[in-house]
Image (cartoon, rainbow over all chains, first blue to last red; front, side, top):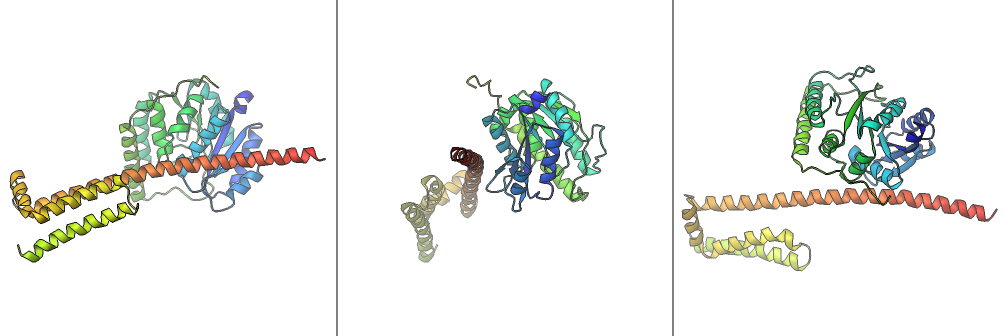
Length: 245
Length: 126
């Protein structure tokens, strides 16, 4: 397992997280000794990059904001260039517990993408009302596409194996919800195996999830549209094994 | 139709074509962006000079009021132009994203190389 972690890169997209990023990086290093952490500073205007660098992470600063999907594609490209096998996305706001990383990476033995799911029994994270229905509808459709039971398709806590890292380094979408919904659709249609493991989530450091019904409806609409467009797009084939490396 | 409105139609079409041509000449507009404007300008000029063409065409396609055919064709051309612009914008955003990624990854490599060089220099002169 320790050898697996040596070939694993933690990618943290960070936008103006100077308050929390150093603590999260510290926690990752203390719970997962020997792992590499890449913080992708997604056009922050505060001292996120500096704090992360002081905490010992490698930092890549984007010249302007690209969104989580854009930041993650940089992470996948970096992983390819530096011969990392696996990529684990961890949020820089401390919502994801790094002790779950080892479990997600272990599960990559039998899958290309492992999603840490919030509603699968662990922890006390909950969402109610229309937003929850939206998530259920999305989960049902993507589950049937991926031929496995997924309950939380919008979780950002996920591990990606070598085949999917190569796929995502080229085709990770930057659009709204692209990093969660469309990326799963791309992976499933390319023939990647997707699995889900229950993880506990901590409440977000700042801010509460919105319960405004109009916002929830807008979310459902945009998510549905993102899913439909993702399904209409041509399939992306998995790159064949790179023989030269 | 009065002679004044006849001249107005021709003048407007000539002006549109003149503006597009001048912008092409000064390289402020690329050919592929100008093509729909040129088509629209030429159509307007033809109809301005020979209004009968419009009346015949309208009758041929079954449009009762010829002016409505003008509105229909104009809207259609504007629609094509807008779609083309949106597509170009999407393509440009994709390229900008790739450039941003590339420059960020390069900046990281440069920093690492600089650090390595500094270390090597420090090691050479103890």
